Image 1 (spheres, helix red, strand yellow):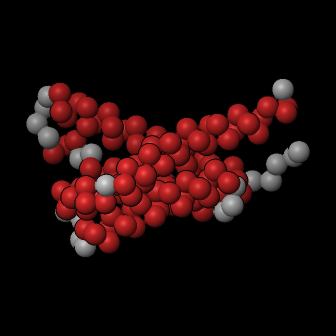
Image 2 (spheres, one colour):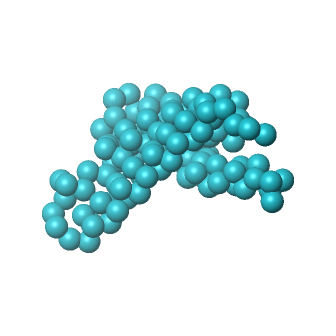
Amino acid sequence: MARWHPLLAWIGLLGLCAAYIQGGLNKALDYPGAVAEAMHFGLPLPSVAAAMTIALELAASAMVLTGRLRWLGALLLAAFTLAATFIANRYWSLPVGQARFMTANAFYEHLGLAGAFLLVALWDRTPHEH
């Protein structure tokens, strides 16, 4: 069972990073759409925000998956997720109803992702016995 641990850990990390890899690739392949999304959320300098989002999502995911500065990549994704959650999922500003319910679910799911990335950073900085 011990020999499967690294593979299972990597699959878990891939699952955590999947949305960021998919998002970064989609934004890179549809840069005008990424800029439009940044404009929709009122971000300053939307073309710069879109480019930085693409770079962060892909580079930080690569850091997490390769183990190279994994802790830093995880902290970057945690911070990005928190910021994006408070920008895009402000459920409290919506009227009571289905849209508010769905946005609240997304808000708390994203808080869970940010928490998971904090745990990855902690895990990476904690000495392990091999």
